[in-house]
Image (cartoon, rainbow, N blue to C red):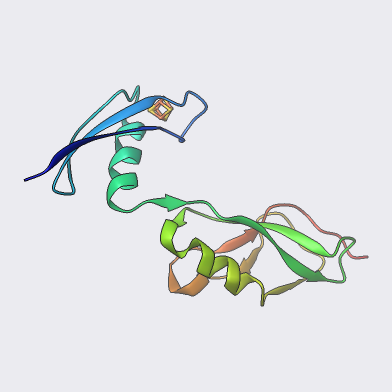
Length: 123
Ligand code: SF4
């Protein structure tokens, strides 16, 4: 039986609380340092199944700019972020686009859409 304490900062809001998680054989026993429940959830998720938002760009045809900023509509599994970014290299959006439009639905079958993070008018 191995018990360890992991220390990291919550990234769910600008407060950046220092979290301490007691982990025994991969199971989170206790989280302290969080000032709200979101911090405890973040700590548990970070240890058992870390997720991150993906922000990047894709090509866009006919837009006033050559690249369209995009973002995942929800956090993706951290270990699949690079795969998702690679998949987006093959995506070309078509102008005009509105912020929030889905650019790549259900990326890699992970249940998360990639959406435009800004409007892009026709050239
Ligand atoms: S624990 Fe709550 S208050 Fe602290 S950084 Fe996370 S979300 Fe913000």
